[in-house]
Length: 80
Image 1 (cartoon, rainbow, N blue to C red):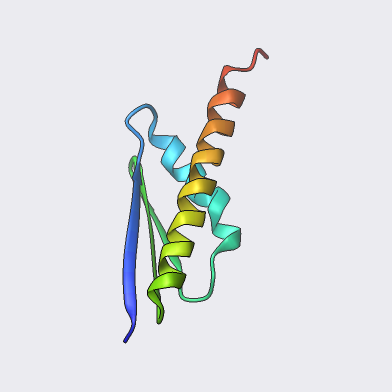
Image 2: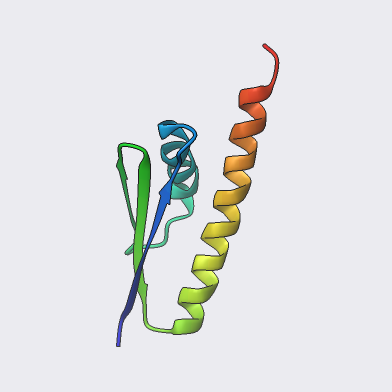
C-alpha cells in the first residue's frame, strides 16, 4: 500500500517566504516528490510504502523549512 501526504506552507508575513523556503528544500527532494508554488504558499507532495519513512520525511522537511525560514528572516533584518 502506498501512503501519500501533502505539506502546504503558507506565509502571512510575505508571499515570497513560502516560495523561497520551498525552493531551498527542493534540492533534497526524493524521486516521486513534487513541489508546487502558488501565490503565498508552497505545496510539497510525496508518497512512500512505509509509515515510518513518511513520518521521518515529514519531520526532516518541517525541521529544514523552519531553519530556512529563520535564515530568511535574519537575512531580511540584516543592515545593508
